[in-house]
Image 1 (cartoon, rainbow, N blue to C red):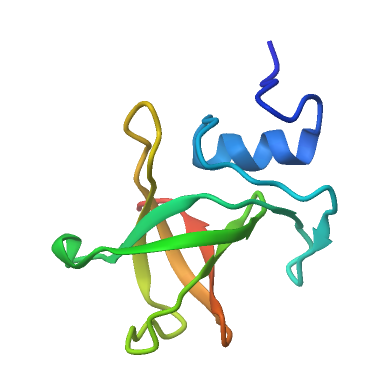
Image 2: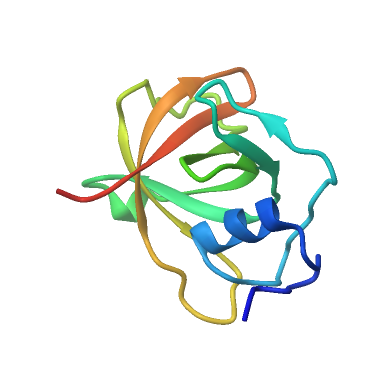
Length: 124
């Protein structure tokens, strides 16, 4: 059975939500889809998550996602002192779910004034 969630049959949204985990808490979606520079479609997706550097799990930072695709996620960062240059490996986990979300390995691939672009990676 396909994920129905709060937003019905919207396939790109279903795929984005499934990428982090299936949940219905703190989810806010727009109806438009944006094209990513990597060729993947981005779906606007707002949820809270925590991210941390590979060897610093006690220094996790709470962020909000802006959009997501099958290949990655863009997170909004309001901490100007947070240094996450391109190439930095991070772990991330969606928060405020009724169950513990999986922890994903990601790499910083883009920086902007309002946040960073993260590409999903597999652990080798």
